[in-house]
Length: 271
Ligand SMILES: [Zn+2]
Image (cartoon, protein in one colour):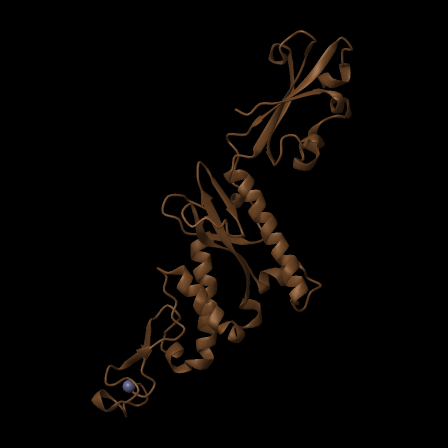
């Protein structure tokens, strides 16, 4: 490698530039799932919305297996807004206008109904019945807020500006997924849930670096003192470092540099 034949009359310059082809961290193999709804932006995980509803559907339908067993046996799930009237469907004895339970309609409202058009309603139903949800189907989740003003930025905390910001979804993980990752945990205590929350917040922070264009790469050149670096010899480049370009140890860039480069000139280009 060129670096090993380092010419003492030459210098190395590391040019740090924005990574315009950065990939979304949500295409990685992440621990949590981000489900987002936004009319203008495609945010969060591909398939996140479907997975959000799948998870809530399984949790609420699991409750229905006990609370509405006959309906579940007939194929009803949490996606059905109405269930067969328990009295009318029992041997037909209370059919028609005589049934006080359904007042002759034959169906009754499903209290566990999840409206797939309304994720806020769906989470509210989950919250209402969370104490009945089978343990491994429960969720640890945090809200996702977007601030949209000359660029977008995301956080798990509200931005406090009702005109330019609002909630766009959730980042979540199921207890089952948590227990599969921390195999020495049998239960999820409040302290452990808080630790999991820290992981969720960290995933949002990395995603926010992507949303705000805070992803970088470097190109290193060896060149004469008075020469433009790019007119010298190209040594190496690498892309896809998330975070402050002035902190190469924190964003991981320095890990790609040989020791000789630690004293090299560094230039941060913002375009
Ligand atoms: Zn009835």
